[in-house]
Amino acid sequence: MYADTGPYNDAIALLTEVIEYYKRINNHRLLGHAQFNLAYTFYRKGNLQEAKSQGAEALRYLTIINDSHLDEVKNQIESWKEKAIETEKP
Image 1: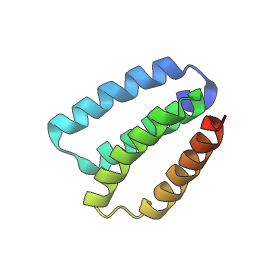
Image 2: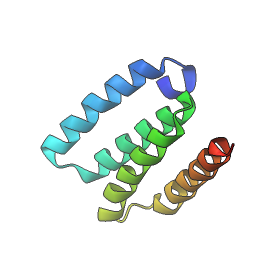
Image 3: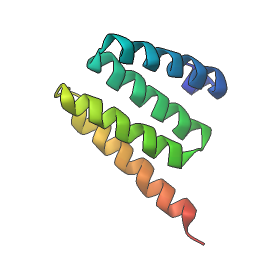
Image 4: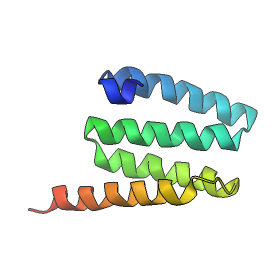
C-alpha cells in the first residue's frame, strides 16, 4: 500500500523489519513476497539499482519454494533492469 501511495521511506522501514522477522522464522514464502514488495518500493521511489538488488533477493527466495508467481516476478524485475540501463545511458 505504501509503495503505491508515496511514503516510500515508511514502506522501506516497515518492509525491512518484516523481512528480518521472516528471516528469523525461516519463512521463505513470506520472505520472498516481502522482498519483492521492498524491490517494488525502491522501483517506485526511483532507485532502480536497489530495486534490482532487492528483486534478485526476492527471486532467490521465491525460487527456493518454487512460487507460482516466479515467472511474473522475473518479468517484472527484468523490466526494471531494462529501465535502469536506459536511465544509465549518457
